[in-house]
Length: 202
Image (cartoon, rainbow, N blue to C red; front, top):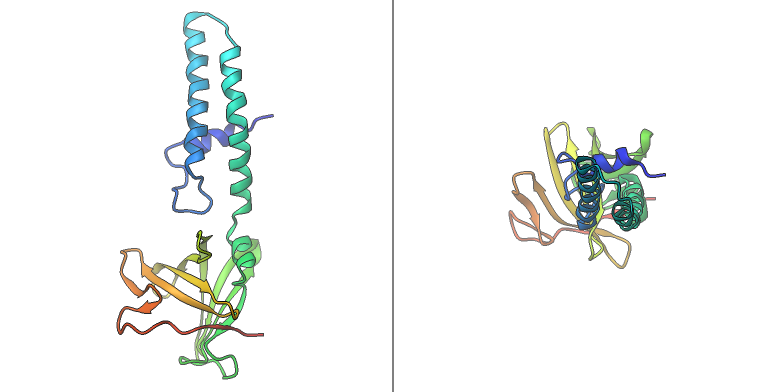
């Protein structure tokens, strides 16, 4: 009961890159190698007219556990699930007690929309805009790394949040796709000041 079309997709050159959370890690390469060996054995047997099923099925038995692990990892790493589990979903602000504005009252919300998508809504009082979170991944140190497309800016930005012990979060980096940073190592590149804590508003 193997899904060979899935195997073919994962082993193609246009499979998702490793930078995406939906992409596999080094185990993907090991699976592809096993499948390629199976195909090589099959073609060799056809060319020689010999029938030898022990070799291919032995390699198939080795490939199955890696394939199952890969499939489970891919299905569990959706943007919505990652954002929800980390605690991102909801409105955030520097000061939840003031009305939305372009200062400390700006409300930056992350909400789950139809189709299990995650949208990022920025409320500056007079204006509100909406962008889509297209990737989310938690790194080994617990940082939430997001990739967000901003239609108004016509650009995709990548940034990371660190959750603080008191439940607030801080932006640790923010960069465009050219690698130009506005925040780096938890500090604004323009003046070197640390990024402020954002509070979740109830």
